[in-house]
Amino acid sequence: MGQGRRWRHANANQPVRRSIDQTLAALADPHRRRAVELLGQRPRRAGELAEALGLPAPAMSRHLRELKQCGLVEETHPEFDARVRIYTLKEGAMADLKKWLADTERMWSDQLASFKAHIEKKRK
Image (spheres, rainbow, N blue to C red):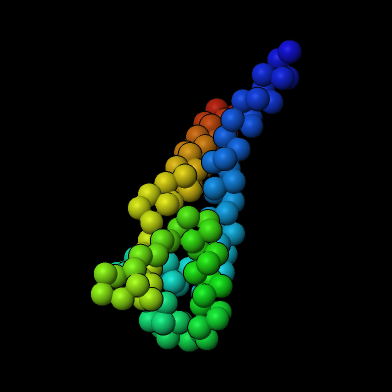
């Protein structure tokens, strides 16, 4: 019975883990990381991103599709021309990743503090 409860609890965060996994997979590519950095400065058209990254349009399109699928960027169309796509970073898209990083850093800090206390105790 205890194991069943533990299993359900462990899988309770599965959508969050999937979100983090997708985000990290998308950011594993240096072109996508650079695109995210550029979009962090301001919204841009795909052509602007492609030019800044030195990529052909089809490659940039694939990178943007990946960033959209994992929820990091979104596209809008200006009123003056529906054919133009403007890409922006999605608000709060990295919240799960940031929380995971903070929790992991806290866990490691706690582990290292405990190890330090143990070593100091042994020295006495």
